[in-house]
Amino acid sequence: MKQRAEATARFMELVGIIPKTLCSANITHDMIGDLRFWRLLAGVKTVVVGRRANESAPLLKKRRVCVVEAITIKKIQKSRW
Image (cartoon, rainbow, N blue to C red; front, side, top):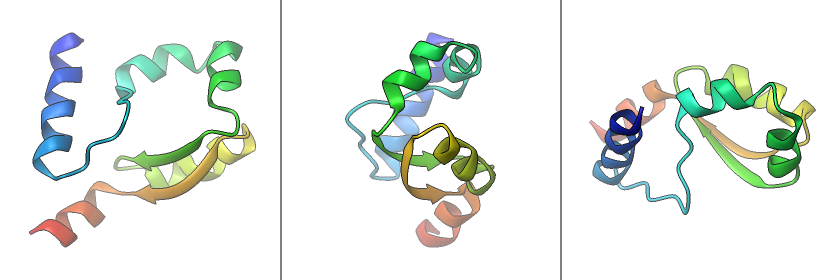
């Protein structure tokens, strides 16, 4: 899992997106069942990036996550290449 997180960080750097923190999807899959995870994210300004970002954003908002933008992989591909 560490290799995936490092690969994700390298990808983000290559496309010029340098977030303060990076949350691997593999980690969040394990954490969504833990209420502490949702308390931690409640009210935090968050950009959702992924192939299903548009589907995820409304669900995260229901959990009180402050989604400021949803960026799909297709959107990144169109704007970068």
